[in-house]
Image (cartoon, rainbow, N blue to C red; front, side, top):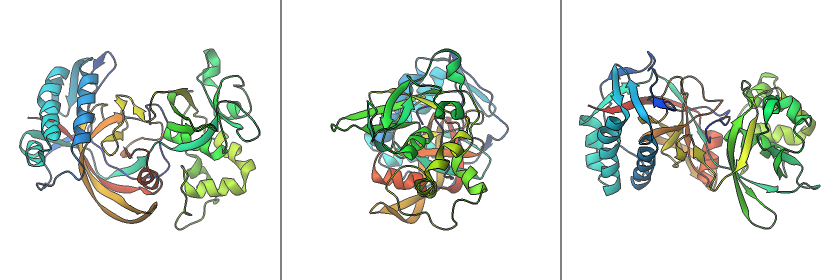
Length: 363
């Protein structure tokens, strides 16, 4: 979720916490964050390739380097410059060298571990690709909107779906549920009729509280029990299938969620509050519990995907970075960003698991 997007109705994830502000990075750690012993780790303590971790750490170092203040973790308050030098940079060096043994040793013997109260719910998100056009016609009829000026920026979803923002359209989509799905993900890649790709990202929201449309459907008994139908399209497969059969109900249920996301054209889709997101390494967090920029370790399950379908689950244990947030990410929940490919789509639709999460800080 670039930053202020809605995030998933799926469920499942873990997190850890850290602190950041705008002019000064300082936020009080909550009681849920407690010092603890490191969990049992092996020399294969991280289940992903290390080069992308180095890239993610380098980007975060650059972003945090522009800020001042201190990070509050548990009982400790650490100046930002010290956090970068002692916590982030050594880990980035080992990741860049591909030295998994030293990286795991750094985690075990050079870091203090602060656990977020368990269990954590892990979900997943991705950057979807959908069909759209820069002009409206009989095929492309469902708009994403630019951020309006003045009081219009605070219109509710129901007002906007009723036409209150005519003239503020950014791009038009071919499928109405795709529009809702992009509001949930907060970003997307629009496939234009001439073959060009038009990336869009979140430009904030209207300031109203978030309601999960899929949960509203389920509460009314309109989503079937059991496994979701096969789908290679973004969003909740059960909700998409229901609205495909009951198109007139989509604006009704969407209108019950007053929270509405605005979009803008971007150079590359998939950006968070600290710049570009790194698949598997960037997570969305609840900033009231976990500070933005936190270096974390998470442990849960991840899906095994074969030919676009989830065929099993396997352990996930890795270093991650709190680099994003979203209106649907509240409490003990973490959303793992998985990227743009078919695996990311399947994971976003299926992942709803529980696990553990820790914030890491150099001793």
